[in-house]
Amino acid sequence: MLNGSNLLLSADFAGAAAAWFEQHYDMALFVNGSAGDMSTRFTRSGCGFEECERFGLLVRDAVENLAALDVEEEALRRISLTYHHMALKRAEIPDLKTADADLAAALDNLENIKRARANAPLLRKAESLVEGARINLVKAKTALEEDAKRADGKHPYLDIRAALFTVNKKVIVCSPFELFSTLALQLRKDGAELFGYANELYGYLADRAAYDNSDYEALFSVFARGEGERYIENIKALLPLSTNPEQTRSGVTLPE
Image (cartoon, rainbow, N blue to C red; front, side, top):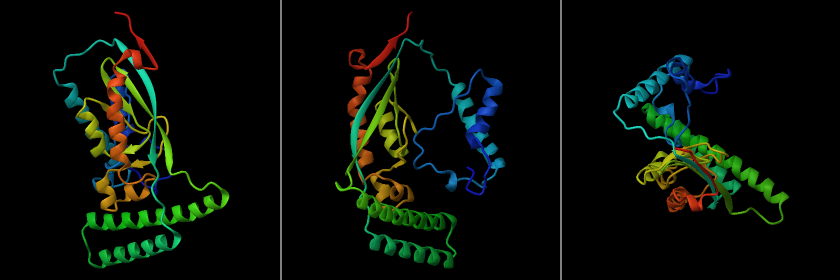
């Protein structure tokens, strides 16, 4: 919620929500989910602490509505945690000349949008393209520096560690990404939930549409187009393992 103009330490809107819950419940725990395509920059009306409070109350109301539902509680019988490795392809980095040209084009587009007095979403989209083009330029310069240091060139894949946390039969995927919700919803169809920013952090993992639209998150990502979908398919293939006690690496069954 708070942008770069705020230099104070803050728990942002999550802190505002947690402060209310801590007054009314024994414990409050905030966990980010698939927030890659859920930026508040498109919905917030300000960047101050008052807006943090407003969003915190929205979270409070949503959780209170869930708590009011008549849901049968299940006793905690078993918890387990498994780790799995997979390789995801890195994004191709443009050469320095192309990156310079892309940034110039993005800046020209932004100026045209401003002159046309376009609406806020279009303006923000144009600003995001400039941000992404600047990031690509930094990537291009960094790649030249890295190539000069390494004789073997750049490794085309990154080794990713995914964790599956199972509570009874409910599987929670602990993802080291700022994952797009469009991808995470595919896991929910299979009955799994998702915790984001877990164990490590590799930044954005976007869907193919974000790459096709040249969205900021896709341009910022270190992963190639289509790797988000491949990651989800790999995770879905692992989901049956997480509910099989004989195939988990660590777990404990709780007494009756």
